[in-house]
Length: 230
Image (cartoon, rainbow, N blue to C red; front, top):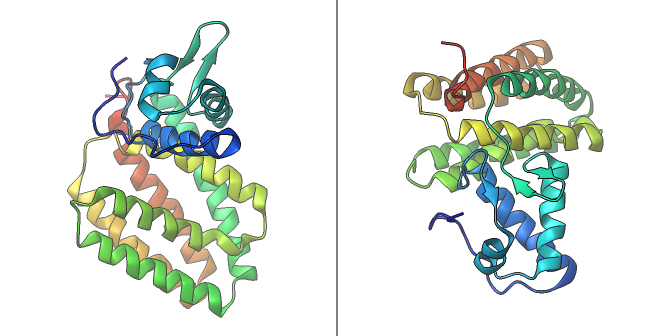
């Protein structure tokens, strides 16, 4: 296994829980960014050297990533990157629609003026990130913050946890898919539309728009699947 040069190494990883958390975050980021090929077997010795971490925290991080669904663990055969399958992506996208629209409805019930101001701030940061498309990771972080802020007041930590895990799985496809300028422009505009619907307390319209937003993003993400319908 050759780790791409773009992957980040661990800066002076510590020991125990701190080291495991650091390598978990770094490996998770690299897996979502597609820096390992789908189906690739991960070599423990190479990972230890690259992330500058000991065997114990590395195995803890790998086990957590397998539980998270970002790795497959094979008994006595180590860890592999999951394949990219159109059927799985469809399942992920449909669950996102269901859970995120549920969370948004609950957020409308509990969200206050502070939520509205935080969402406007998150949308402004995303707009600024749109102006610097060359800094993709900055845009990805601003995009994630916007969607987290949109659903934050829903009141269910478990629901938000499930949504976060689905986002990670979905993004692994989306970031590997070819771009589509027309759909991308529409998706970018929808962030501002969602924020305005929140301010106007238009619950039904916001839920419908969020579902469309996920559906359009799914249309792009399908480009990462070799087995997608023709």
